[in-house]
Length: 87
Image (cartoon, rainbow, N blue to C red; front, side, top):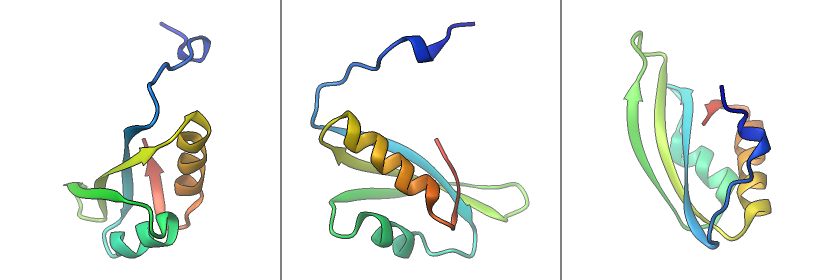
């Protein structure tokens, strides 16, 4: 198995970055994204609903300006109380 931690991701910044978010079905994705991104330009598309209908996934695309920005955004998203998983 390849250890991905040994390899640094090389990207040309700024670039669009995609996050996959999983939230509970009853949560409002627009409100969650507004809380996290505020006025930052982004795109959100619904993806899948879990088999039992409890969770919904969304694809979030946002412009990141550098590696620190990309990682910080990941941390803010993963710390949000209504986001159950982020990939």
